[in-house]
Picture 1 (cartoon, rainbow, N blue to C red):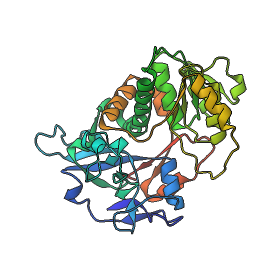
Picture 2: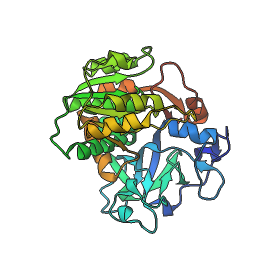
Picture 3: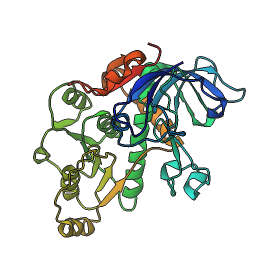
Length: 346
């Protein structure tokens, strides 16, 4: 069968490759691959920046998945024809205290694996297998939008972290700033709008579909932080750009929360007056928290978020679909791209 593959650590090795059928050791649920989303992590793996295969050879890429069940074991609740998304991370084999409690997104010893990223083949093949525990049911009414479950889970986890930090004190946020209007930023803004917060989204470019998507959420689109009219109670930072992170940290009001979800591939460093910034954060009881990956419960929350959203708005996030036969074309960003997906059946 065909698959999206790459040699981890080797730049520009992306290819369509014939691979063996998925082994039963991957799980008892056999799935037909439908769609896989491409994100910045995939681009970095293809560039050779990181990624690790189980046997140091080619790895099947793809962690943002949507598939259709071919075979599901009795008692799994999964039947032929059901749509599913696969959870990305697997707990370490030790396991650490966090992994032992199902919080593998907080693995303490770094021995976890991740489908299509770290030590385990991904979901970018014509067929894949998964254990029922790691198969997230996708309601049929979501259809192709089920490919957004995994990226949405990143944000439901991030908002979970924000809520837990905010709960240290009286917590009733009103203004939310999201930095970066890519898929992660727009999904963060979607959740903020669903919660009834005033939403502001910052992006360096006001060209293409992003401003309209923000406005259609009832939000304000900005290209300069100076245009922000109110201090944000919560910032969801999705760019990973150091200058943006520092500028947002300086904006936080008393008990404000800044959640970092982006990692910049750039090696650039910036000069920061840390003493002054630390003083501001301490005096204001402000908090910076990092958030990556998601636990199983966040995937279920992501399905709920997508079901509550306007389908036509979500559909506009998927701006381009490329066939498996030419999937590397999806790695090359086009001007109006937001979310590019690969059709594993084409």
